[in-house]
Image (cartoon, rainbow, N blue to C red; front, side, top):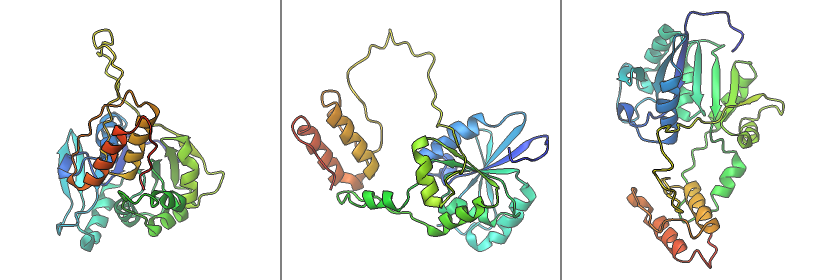
Length: 274
């Protein structure tokens, strides 16, 4: 992939902040992608995958701790104060390539401290947010999205891309330009299209399960993007959206109330979350 010679087994380090409940981590989209797709289907006779999680913020972990989850080694690294131990740990591991789902602050801290000036990085673009994206997001006042802008990370990716040791893949072609803008990549930067896979239940019988003209929105309505999506679906198909919102996050009562109001008036009213 990066012009390296033949090897008996490719050692891949998967960088991610959470692992969909594994090792007591949160449940999120990146964690689902990491645990139930990458770590589930990528390992094989010629590929070995291990997961590197962010360093604990609330614990002073002296050494990396290994969790065996679904047959995969998942490591929580030592606290930042003991990065020299993490350095020795990563040096001993001798990973051939790092696979990063986007590049979060925590993933950057792991990758940038790993030994070697020519570390190979496969960068899976998922949700790049340049300044103009945040400008639009910040127009929503009802339920603001926490901003995780980290210029140090973006500068690092910009500089490291010049070494030729990064390969970019993207889950959607519409994200390519946003990634180029965020990381200040050359216009001719190659970005391979690799959409997020989906699992299809081959045993599902559509003849037995009769279709109903309802839309069940499964997204957690706790951030601006999901609120927008829900509202646009309800606006486009007002007869189909189920008039119930199940809240799992008690901090979003205002958004929930706004959405209920929207549903009650969706036949005649446009609605903006501002």
